[in-house]
Amino acid sequence: MNSTKRSPWITLSALLIYFFLYAPIVVLIVFAFNSSKTNIVFEGIVNQGACGPFYWFCKLFSNGDVLDAAKNTLTIAFVSTVVSAVIGTMAALSLQRYDFPVKRASEAALYIPIVIPEIVMGIGILVFFSALFTWFNHTFGLTGDARLAMGLGTVIISHIAFSIPFVTLVVRARLHGFDKSLEEAAMDLGANEFTTFRRVTFPLIAPGVLSGALLAFTLSLDDFIITFFTTGPGSTTLPIYVYGLLRRIVTPEVNALSTIWILTVLIVVFISQRLEARS
Amino acid sequence: MIQTLRENKKLQGLLLILPTLLWMFGLLIIPLILTLVTSFGGRSADGNVIYKFGLENYLRLIGITPEGGFDPLYLQIIWRSLTLAFQTTILVILMAYPLAYFIARAPAKRRNTLLFLVLVPLWTNFVIRIYAWIMILRTQGVLNSVIGWLVGLAGGHFQPFDLYPSQGAVLVGMVYEFLPFMILPIYTSLEKIDNSLFEAAADLGANALRTFWRVTLPLSMPGVVAGTILVFVPVIGTFIVSDILGGRQVILVGNLIQRQFLDARDPAFGSAASIFLMLMTLIVTLYYTRRFGFGEEIAAA
Image 1 (cartoon, rainbow over the protein chains, first blue to last red):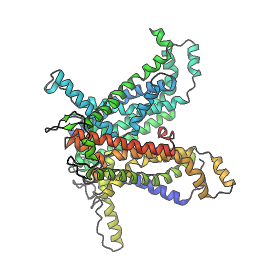
Image 2: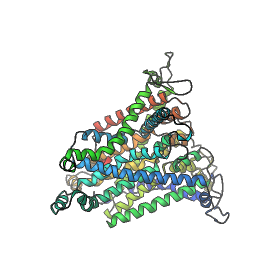
Image 3: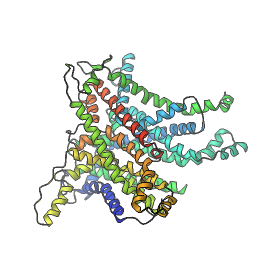
Image 4: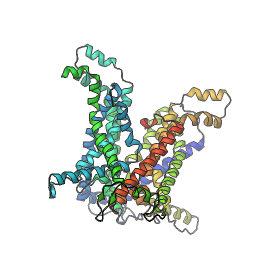
């Protein structure tokens, strides 16, 4: 579609929708500097302690629960991104280039997580793990701390499960316009399969793998529903922690947390866009 | 052995897809089958699942009590979820279309920035975005303060609206959460439309409105279809938007399921509700995609 003259009504409604998208975020950030602890009405900019207007940010960094939750969130996102990027890329290569007996079924299975509500998958995984763990603990007579239970492991495994389809989708799109003669040329010049993959195929699909991984990372960071059903004691993530707070009293600490979150994600995205533009 | 692997293309393909299949089988297929099996079970006095084959949970969902009476409680919840999901989807289409159109018609070098601006809110956290709406909508919140201030300027007296918690607040929250998922696919399909089509329409004497109605809209339908699926599916199953913005009064299917597993401790009934939700979603999306066709736009988004 080309740029042509636009009706002023379209421009006006676009501006209004951008306003709708950004107003809540501005409110979140402004209230991170609120001097009222209950954080219902904005009572002026806080100026307390050594940190002055950044009082709530400092308070946040001395809060052990938040730091633990942040650590869990990043660990889960990092591990599940790396694993799902590798597995998803393998699947994309397989589906795009090979013919094998269960191909149609695999493609269908990869679409399921996109067309069923996340809660259905979450419940299924919860039912599965609790049945598996009950059976395992009973059979092997495990008691106390030795028992298998929900925790970081179950959350990571589940995050990998919902990330794989998205990575596969993105990498496949990249493979779609791939020129196979480049690989054939490498093989003709005497490179073996491994060298060809390392020196030709991977560099070409790397941007696709990177954007797939970035998508998996943001999905994992943002996930609430699957985490909610697979988490256990000691594996609370930031979304779960904030949800817990929302049912009690929310202090501006949560706003400070949100502000840091938004800035961090923006910086990460900005850097990755720069990297992509350069390659 | 390496030689066999080199020559057998089928084997190579299978080995590459194997980890994915393991994951999908273990964490998707088996869990769904287990949920189905559990949904026919019952509940023991101490809240454990009794495995058997019975349809009580499904009958209970559609309102038939064990005594043979009729109790529409759960049907009302299902109906409320469906209505809210349809309302959200329609509002989201109405808001997303003009913005997607605006971006697609912007100068080429500015399109990426405009699109980027749509994505930024998505990168703040889902739960945090809901919290932002509490701050805006509550009785002493930002919206009422701003209106109160404006009315005060005009010399009037303002009685703050009770907007939160309510079903309306849930609707606003849902629209906000899922709006970007509609903008992206509509933009993708609008952007693909060949310019010569507009020129042809103009040459043939069509005015702007007619061109939009006969050319632009039909060609952007794949984007609308993809966006509808990307919005409808998560909305119908969500429970935290309604939990937080509805103040525990707006109960949707998602809340019903969640409570069976956490508070009510009746996993069998929760599983039945979950299977019911899955079937309902599949029927709606299948009917919809059959009716309007299925684009590649889901992949693009």
